[in-house]
Amino acid sequence: MTTLASGIDLPESPTIGNASVMVACDLDRTLIYSANSMALQCADSSAPSLVVAEVYEGAPLSFMTRAAWNVLERLVHHAVFVPVTTRTVQQFRRVNIPGRDRGYAVTTNGAVLLHDGVPDPAWSKFIHDSVEANCAPLQEVHERLLGPARPPAILRGRVAEDTFVYSIVNREELSADYLEELREWCQERGWTTSLQGRKLYCVPSPVTKEAALAEIRRRQPVDVLLAAGDSRLDAGMLRLADVATRPAHGELHQDGFQRANLSVTSATGIMAGEEILHFAAAHLPALQRALEN
Ligand SMILES: [Mg+2]
Image 1: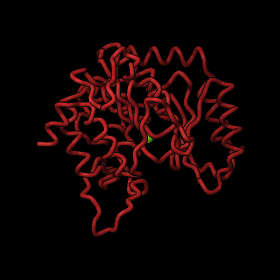
Image 2 (image 1 turned 120 degrees about the vertical axis):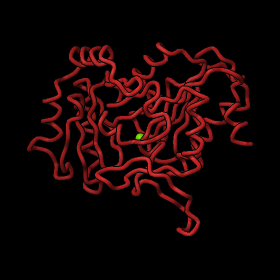
Image 3 (image 1 turned 90 degrees about the vertical axis):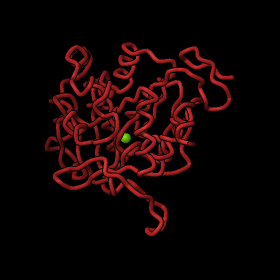
C-alpha cells in the first residue's frame, strides 16, 4: 500500500476507488504531436487513424490518434482535466481538443491561468510581482539569447507574452557546452532553460507549471492529482503529482528522469500520447468501465 501526498492510500492496482481526480496534461509531445514528432513505428498501411488537434494558417499542424481522442472526450466528464502548456494563450487557442475551454487551463508555462477560457488577472499579477522581485529583467536574457553575440545555431527568437523568451535552434550545430553555459548564466539570474525539439526556452524561475497547478488545486480541491509531461518544464508538475506519467521520449527521457510515483510509457511518439490517456483512464474506474463496454 502506498500513501499519496494527499493522504489517500493507493492500492497496488492502479484504481483509486471513488476519489476525485485531476488530470493535468502537458500538450506538445505529451498529448498532441506534429508530423515531425509523432514517430510512428508501424508500416504506413497499418498506421492508426488520426484526428487533427491543431490547425495553423489553414493547414493541420498537430494530431492525436483517434483512439486517444475518444478516451479524452470521455475523460473530461470523469475527471477535472487541466491542459498545461508553455504555449501562449494565442497558441493554446489553436489547439482544439475536448475540454479546452471548460474549467481551468495553464498557458505560458504557468504565467497565465485560464478559467473557462478567460485569463485570471489576480494570478497574472502575482506572477508578475514574483518575477520582478526575483529575476533579471527579460531584456537582459533576451540580449544574451538573441543578441549579436549569439552562436549561429540560434536562428531566431520570440518573446512570449512579455514573460519569457525562446529561440528556434539548429539542433545539429547547437553545442552541449553552449547549453550548459546558458543554463548556468540563467540560473544565476533567476531563470531556467529548456530545450524541446527545435525550441530553446529561457523562463523566469517563478513561472512554472507546478505553481499554477498548485493554485488550481487550492481553488478546486481534489483527492488525487495525476500529471503527464515530457520536458524539463514539466518536471516540477510530475514531482507535485500524486501519480505521474511521462512518455518514453523527450527531454526528461534523455535525462533519465525517474520518481517513485512515475511510470514511463512503453510506446514512443504519438502512440505514447494514447498510452498516457489509457493510463489516466485506468485511475478512473467509472471511465474504465465505460471504455470497456
Ligand atoms: Mg511537451
